[in-house]
Amino acid sequence: MDIEIATIGGYEEVGRQMTAVRAGDDIVIFDMGLNLSKVLIHDNIQTEGMHSLDLIDMGAIPDDRVMSDLEGDVKAIVPTHGHLDHIGAISKLGHRYDAPVVATPFTCELVEEEVDDEQKFGFDNEIIRMEAGETMSIGDSGQVELEFVNVTHSIIQAINPVLHTPEGAVVYGLDKRMDHTPVIGDPIDMDRFREIGREGDGVLCYIEDCTNANKKGRTPSENVAREHLRDTLYSMEDYDGGIVATTFASHIARVKSLIEFARDIGREPILLGRSMEKYSGTAKRMGVDFPSDVDMIGYRRSIDQTLERIMNDGKENFLPVVTGHQGEPRALLTRMARGETPYQLDDGDKVIFSARVIPEPTNEGQRYQSEKLLGMQGARVYSDIHVSGHLCQEGHYEMLDALQPQHIIPAHQNLKGLSGYVDLASNQGYTLGRDIHVTTNGNIIQLV
Image 1: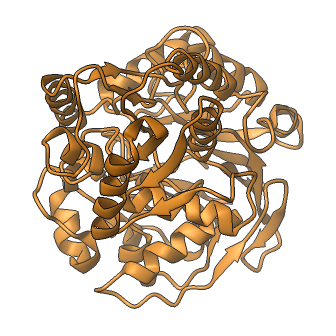
Image 2: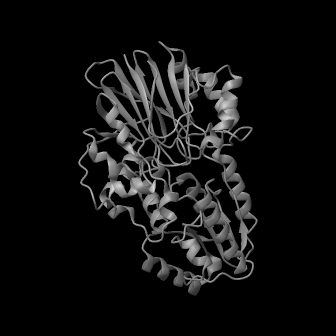
């Protein structure tokens, strides 16, 4: 059976992931994402009302014209998890393919919300919910099967999809860390990865997320971040001024920890910002292990009214959890830093960034500016109360040892970011150009 892999997006940058695998006449697309930095660099861009061609020209979504070079029919669009760099282009490109979107339930909910917001294109693709550990047949040959393997990441219900073919398995390894003690959900299923590496014809190809491939050591568990956050907030228990926290709105486990520890130190947590309401509201609706009695407020007028109430009732009684961890210009924390909200920051007030800056120049510049503006208002900034959602080098070594793939395609970074992974794989007996395929967007690699 012919096996081809089209590397469409995410092979020259962090963001706008999209990969297609052709097995015979059947094609499966993994991820269809947005590059947020290409959007944020423009003021007041609303992607919902933009045409896909304009977004492609901006470099914001994948240029999927290479799909016309694959001889076969798309049978499924499979996002690995609900981050926008993996689902943010589905509403713009998904309608081009007569194929269902197949994802875990939480990811499906987020895809449906993206589709509901879309203003330019109609989207009537079926959306199929599939749990980690389940499989489905792809195409009519009966020879190709899709499997979801549970992984842990900085969003709940993340999976690594595996396409089983007569020539071996294709494992799409974006995005994960090896968390054996997660705050929400099950640990990463390393037993299943080891089985896949040793059953049948083994793993034909492994496509791997290289976000932290240049970092030595092992990525800690989310429980490490939880204890760091607990220690930080408990140290502020006797502070009688304002405390504000920010984190990834999609990081449900981290938001849950912030809510719990705010209450432990006698403060009322309130989630503020459109994306905070979106992700936490979705988790609450789905019955995820998440506090159900916390206020979530997304619209600007309601947010400002809430901030006025906080100031009137005494900000020492509250802990707002707000958007703006990357210094995004329109996010709530950035508006606070510019003095554009009713919330007044005083000398000594605490601002907790429970998120590292995403390693990309736009984010780095915006985050730097946000922290400086907060400091100019007298705030004490606590940065990087966080652990990454991506593997470092020892995790990559463990995955290669578990899967023992014949071919490797590094992804989710630029060439500099891929270099650490190439070195690591080379030390394990792989050879660049033979079985390590460093590629760019818009290429097709023929494996069989």
